[in-house]
Image (cartoon, rainbow, N blue to C red; front, top):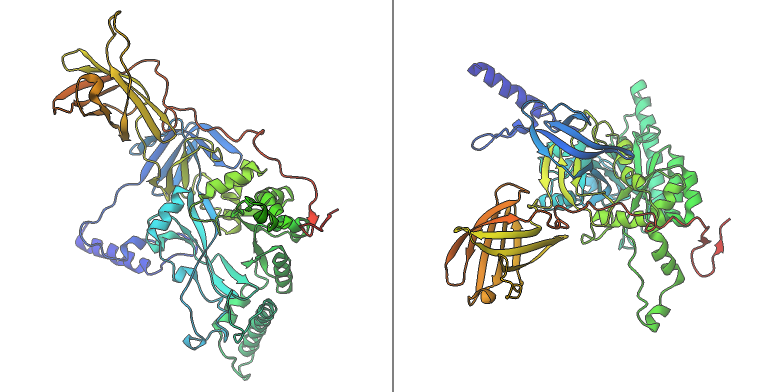
Length: 593
């Protein structure tokens, strides 16, 4: 390439890079080239073929053994008989299962406050529909790492403050720069028809009624604003209306089909949100509270999707007679029924999205989802609520949600069924880039015979793996003489496996030494039956050893070599209760009919 062509290519990329994030949600052409690179530029090929793996293409659609080919973050082939292209890096995942990447249906961030004096905005600081998360979002590497470990590859990020709060964005959980991390810049307008907690009495509004009144008046103003400008454009002799960015943004959501997500702190707020949406022709999505089961029929009749939180209540404190007296029947019933809320909504035909909104950081998303599955939520329905349903609702079904050709390579690699209790998410792939969550280790379980360099049997060790816990014993190798008792087994301590390296220490007193001996073995190849290493006695003497795993040794359990975690059995899965609830929920409620 000539120097002039090279310079023209750089200039073209620089121009296109100024386009930022395109409206399709992908990063603009050459977006990575808008910032100069200090030092050598890296351009590692991203061309993978994930083979010999069980593939859950979409909820209810499974390939028991297939391959997935990824180029530059996009799935280019998937199926049972896929020809692996030349140049692809083959990654065998035998015994593993891959699922579409999970989408977190709701999360919030606090954005910088503004005052009316900063521009042509609404006079009340709680009315801020012009605020865009896409203008302020900055990836948080530690948060993204935590979310990836839970299987989340895409999440909705909404502004936290206000009554008409602003517009959300869909972002990935990878380590890409902002321009590439934003999947969809303006997903929905977010609203909360009540006042923030702790708002002073001298501020307006200071009550839920005042918040609804302000929101309604603002929507009416937005409609008037649009008609006033239409009249001015048709007849320039009319007075020119004042410009108001907030009202311009709001008018675009009335009758247009664009999503409006309204918070519902309880089930009654859901009905209030519906009346508000009906009045102004809004395409409503309800951000639920987890109490929708209390007015299930009314919420079903709304026909609106619900973002369902999974922050189930803790068991009430009934440890003492006095504490039990302070627990109301309503709280007891909510503790029992809250995990059934997702299943009851699905059973009623309500479209749901699952979210870790309000879930403590100490509780992984899948733990809460598995609890909902145990309480009647069908596994396919749970998976759909975190993949296909949010992808379709948020307008990105052409890019994420399933593992089909042409979509972004967002998926999880697990060691079993996603909703089985012991299943681990080993890897999370975001835009075709793998992130390791559980470090892969060699299969070291079983009985190993150690032979010294002179060919004499040295030691025999047994290693078992249960979950992520390793244990084992060591004893003198070789066959004992008929007159001698069997060698005593000594526990191994500080056992660790890193990659294909096994290390441990043990008390060498039973072997004629005072102190602890150190053993290190390296498997010649992953999952092979032969290893080599060193045995260092307390005296400092080193002994080269070769270890051979005994054929027919019991397989390791947990990390590798075990039977994959199985789905929740029907006996353990609690069916969603079909009986009617008491209304209102509590001691004096009557059965709904």
